[in-house]
Image 1 (cartoon, rainbow, N blue to C red):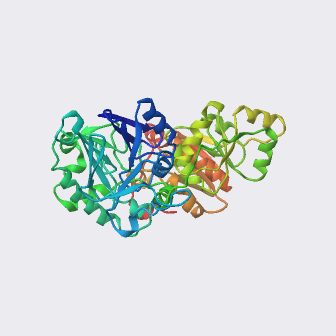
Image 2: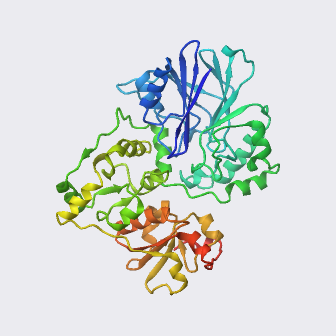
Image 3: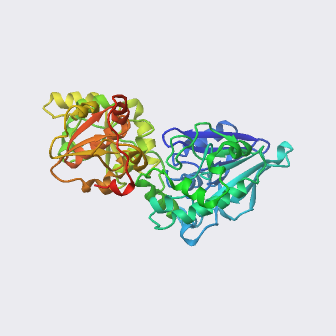
Length: 485
């Protein structure tokens, strides 16, 4: 049996390629939208993709299953579990007409890829239709499965969050019933043999859980012993545990759910943004275009195009752009030439396809030399607030998650998570200055740039809550009802 994980560090998302070396047939599980890499990888191994599946209708990235089916003609295997609201709606909408070659799976159904048997196990809770896949290598002489692709059901050290149908997809009242369903699914997981490997859909950094480990795989036995979510025998205790402290999901999660259910747009090939000249930069500034600046924070803070968003090409990039940009908007990048493809790939993975142009950072020097104005973001060390009162007409804004805020924040601060500034940013009083901080500098920097784009006078508080604590600054704890503006 051939087995490889292809990992996306930005989204902390794992795709899997499982192949039968005897027949040269391969299965791709949970592909992202830039499907060329799967095709190339399988071809380099002397195999061909004959099957594609995914564990569930994803919320954190745009699925590449439809794209890969168009490119390869491989058969699609998808869940037919769950309620009517979570059925795939695009299987009969092949490009040019007709239906894809597909099969709907229910709990216990099996299919084969060469000499490898894959069995679907219904594991609802994270989503109603969620499937895991038991993999048995009959070609290697095995009579029991070697492992299970667990998707967003069981991670290393955590389990999939059950609140997204409510917090991301807007189904009010769904999170507690989903948590109870997840508890029952986990009881079934506990009955699996300890030797079984688990291959999860995400690692540390994903917003699909709250405490994911960085180890790429585990075993059922290890998780039963050390995964805190599996330690509960009482359902009510589990529900309280799993719903507490879940971070606010980025707004684009709702859009991903909808598009993955209805059918992701077919891409064909990656967008190829044009290299921009200085004259075009002047035009874009005048149009208040969506400009995403990927430089480091100090370079951005020292001088950027008016209205630019700050989004470095780090693991936070998808959360920032996904929170602040809509698919209909044309996007222009400030990015080094050798990282253009990386930025474009990150954008299309969350359905931001209108990447029109880019300018390398040195173009900003030319822009300024020709009379263009670069904007600086005011900044001050957060410890300074210990020695001076907050000025009048100023809002102190904490852009961490609500659970972090409740554990301890600066006196007088209000809380809006940086991923929630689009739906909630207008709650900030017009005409007031906004002083913004987070745990360190990363989230607050992205928030500061976005608030500048909205027209607020922003000061970035460098060092964040960690520097405040090191300087023995006062922290205040409070309940959720006091966190809104």
